[in-house]
Image (cartoon, rainbow, N blue to C red; front, side):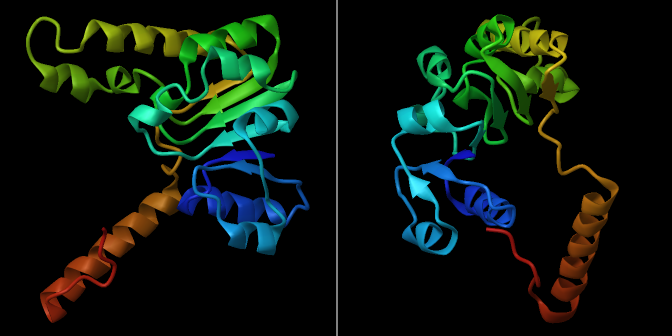
Length: 194
C-alpha cells in the first residue's frame, strides 16, 4: 500500500492497514518517525512509491504545490495493474491522466471521493453563482472530464460524501446536540471544532 500524505487521516489509514499486515510505503514532505517505529512504515521517494505500490491512496491538502501532484507523468510511473484512491482534494489528481490510464488498462481501477469540478455536480454552485455563466469554463471542463470517469466499470466516484451514512449522520447530530446543550448550560462546547 502506498500512502501519500501521513497527516491525521493518512496516519489513521496506516494504523488500520497495519492490523492486516500490509507492507506500507509512504511519501510525505514531513515524514513521521513514529509511524516507522510503530507500524514499520517505510518512507520512500514518490517515484518509488508509485512504482511499487499495488494501491496508492492520497491524503494531502490542496496547495499550489500539490496541484496535479499525480499528473500524467506520475500516473505513468504507477505499477501496472495498480489502483488509485483519492479522498483528499480533486485537483490533486489530473483527471485526464486517470482517464488515459483507465482506457489503456494501466490502472486496474480507481476510487475518488473528490474530483476536479465536483462543485458543478452540486446544484448550489449553479444556483448561487448567478449570471449566465456562473461557473468558469475551466471548471466546467474539469467536471465533464470527471463525469466521463463514470463510463468505466472499474471507476467509483462519490461526491465528497463518503461520510454520509445513517450512523455518521446520527453521530454528527448527537455531537451537535451535545454542543448546544453544553453551551447553554456551561457556556462552552464539549466538542469544539478548530
